Length: 173
Image 1: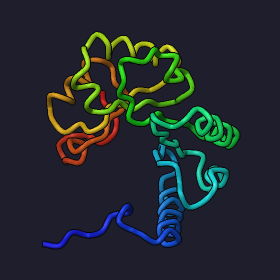
Image 2 (image 1 turned 30 degrees about the vertical axis):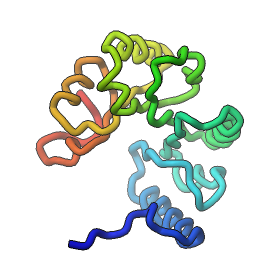
Image 3 (image 1 turned 90 degrees about the horizontal axis):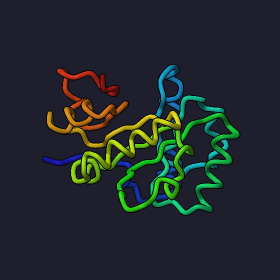
Image 4 (image 1 turned 45 degrees about the vertical axis):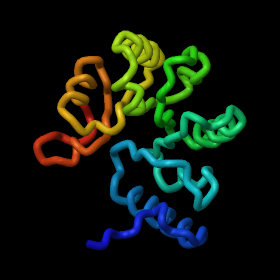
């Protein structure tokens, strides 16, 4: 059995940029009323995103430098877009060090929410929610993870479980 290539398998930068640009345009033209969570584009400057759609939510890696974060946030906020801190996973940092209140969404890494103490997760989620930040869990692939997310007031989730016909995609209620 031969599997198809993924986006990361494209070696040529120009081809990769062209594919990314086509996908962003296609999705923006078809989904007009829901948040569109995307990674930082490689194809063009961030400033072009608001022209495609005001629904883009830029997923920012948790390991981005303060300088890069400042540059990204300036462009994104000026364009009226929203941001998501992607892959949050550290209990050792104080909340001020993860720039609480800067993001519209925070997605917790699977290793973090499955291994941290429940009380730590609840405390951090409560802090984010004070700033009206929506919280999500990544890689929900079992009933156990889904029940954890539902029991501690998580707003959004991603993962294999949401691809099945038996569960609604996206929101946890």
